[in-house]
Length: 612
Image (cartoon, rainbow, N blue to C red):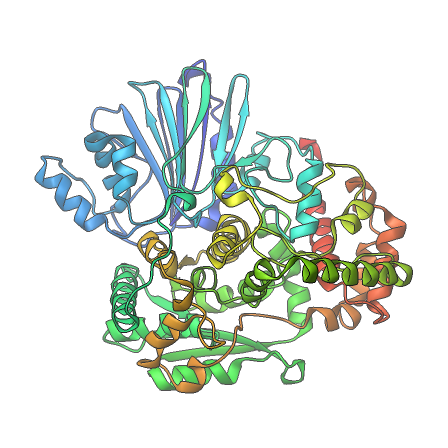
């Protein structure tokens, strides 16, 4: 696990500024506190900071070929690297280390980039500088587990694991993208390739970028839309196949030469990961959970304790108050790297800090909800797709009347849903455009793949819609940034691409059956977990945000909506203050929109003014 950064210049290596890359690496030190290095080849210079996980003594990065013509730097883990190492050694390649990054170098030599990425099982963002071709390749894993940002200029460009590294080295201005800002307020995160900084874009999941011959080209090597449609299967056989696949995947994710643990909320997904992990290790696995004051109604500590006792794990739990979250807020905003209103950022940050006291790697349950239909909005979007036209018209009329009454009271429309998946937005588009005027008439983000761009007409379409945006741009960004803030590596076994491909081939009945979601996962878990845990509804690392914004965080909210950043971002100050007052008074619940706005304002305050 590392942070990577680099530069390229069409004029060649000699013109690369020698102070820029070190500045980028210093900004990424939290991602890799154990080591750092930089190498150049052809048009590019590559750098990496290293968190040592495998081959602690020999895994220095970047790794250079013996003739100096290839340089590779990687962030992430290649879980099947032992098998690839053996295959490459049998083909005559000689290795100097046991680390997975060297497999990328020899694999590129042996199979080319397309052949290499086809074989990879893992989470990764890596760069290959090829001096012979005068080319640089930037590659991101299939699901977007690891982040990778890019800025291009007429004379060259730069890339990094975090936007902060680009800003720290003066590689990008702080000019904002209006549409991206509005979409951030609407979704609570910034969906798609464009970030809120106009010059910075993401390398999309399942994609590599070829930088060569004065051009920057993008090649997609794995698409959600290309995966086969769902098919029915024998239920008993399906449960056996799913159990075997998940066990094999978790086994591969245990690869580490450092202490490892599991985030355990007590919900189905994290409990299943903990159970499979405990099956596969000889000693009690370390598990970690956090909770909030018992009167918040959201404390899940008893559930995680129950699962830990059942499995015999070595469990550590800690309870937090609103004051603890407030104290951590500056660190969360700084390490989040881009604005995001997901309230789970705060508990994830605190949980990672707790776990890092004992382990360097954790396994988490992210991805199961998007693959096995764990969210409440999936059944409803399927029902809406099947409803007759007259009922649709009646529902829209009812919603319109409610919206009119609400606007009279609080000045905003009821929140909408993303029609691609049913994902609940923070507010109506009209409310967001009033809060931040200008921008496009339609704020909904649509992926380039037309097979994923239309409204959800099936459960499969809804799942793929969330896998395309909500998963990489919110959940995975949150987990990566909040764990790496504490130099902790997080692994997500449900998002091994083999599990994803198998899950998306399931029929609807394998997910939703007899009014219960995640049917096949619950059948797997029945053999491993207490019945009460197996039957629980969806839970996660939540916090009582609406109540806290009316209570212990009300002063923070009211101060923020009057800060200079409101004007700098172009927000309608009077309207924002009115929305905040309506929420604090208890007349409306605008917690998600207001928290997202607050996080945007705090993020704007972290921008370096000299880069503008």
